[in-house]
Amino acid sequence: MINPFDDIYFMKRALQEAQLAFEKNEVPIGAVIVMNNQIIARAHNLTETLNDVTAHAEMQAFTAAADFLGGKYLKECTLYVTLEPCQMCAGASYWTQIGKIVYGASEEKRGFLVMNTTLHPKTKVIGGVLEEDCSKLLTRFFIEKRNLN
Image 1 (cartoon, rainbow, N blue to C red):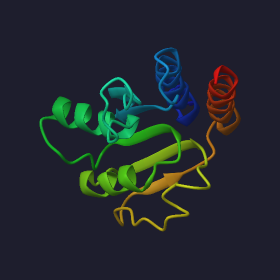
Image 2 (cartoon, one colour):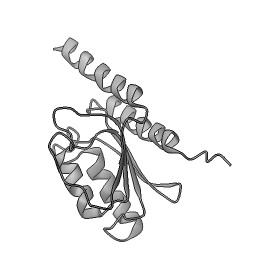
Image 3 (cartoon, helix red, strand yellow):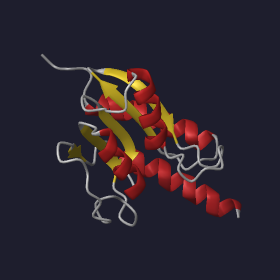
Image 4 (tube, rainbow, N blue to C red):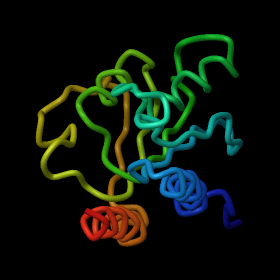
């Protein structure tokens, strides 16, 4: 039997969050956290809105998921995020002990892979899910930003 709730399904939900960020003139990165095929947290970048450099989509999602679960550990959860997490977000994921991270586009300059950031040893990682869609939204955002200046 095919599971309708697969990585593509949930990455599309993360892309919806990224679109919300885009509409708020935030860098369009979205995230959802899933447990047992249920979205328990949705978030997008809010660094401009909150004037807070730590208000990345992943950080917002970790807080919302921990609040939903009533505990700080996300061992049975999966983070879906449209861009490979940065060092800060990967570090936070370590402390949440998240079970799995699925990301869309790679971040070749500041991503956790190029920065050699250590994830929790039990965290599984899958990259490149809907990578083209995730990249296109980011590229469009930055092209529009440059054209306005």
